[in-house]
Length: 275
Image 1: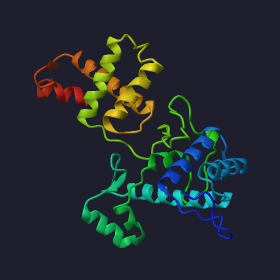
Image 2 (image 1 turned 120 degrees about the horizontal axis):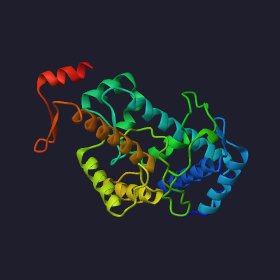
Image 3 (image 1 turned 180 degrees about the vertical axis):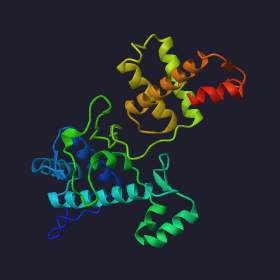
């Protein structure tokens, strides 16, 4: 690896490698965690610290503008992908880290927006991290809230600046994950295992239990979710459970164990639904 940039070369231009980009993103996540993002960007001291750490890591002599330029480039990628995902027919493949759509959907969109063609085959490995870094950034790049408004509490899984494996908290998610039956079943098995271990508290589970479950869940499905991802689904399942118990407590309703369905005569259903 080159330890110096050539004399007389532009100190604001970096030939970015994937490892450099990963490290830069981890630096930004760390500064965000420290509360050093104000307005539409980081404060002056944060940029100074990040450039020093970046140069020390890669043996370079780039100035702050080099990092700021790539910050803008990453913001554009993040914004482009978010705009794509707002369109009908587009979805996010979290395993492949790509925007997905049928060919006819892509063709029609690219015809109207030629610049978007690169995202048809481009993988954005750090999109979940960018969702956190650029959260609340509006279309012109301004920031609608300060970094102090962002929740970075118990869902923060830490930032490892040495290995480039920092994981962004999932308290702000750009992309919603569709729960599959396999995910549901595995999550329920995790919950049952925690019950057997005696970890449930009052209507919920301990912090340690949630940490263990999200670690196992992410490993199983190759995701990078935070604890709130599971907690939200836990609340949804809890509501389903309460709704079903309420229905079964009403006259005329029964549980069909074989079909795993609530059954009742049509007249009973019609009367209940009307109310």
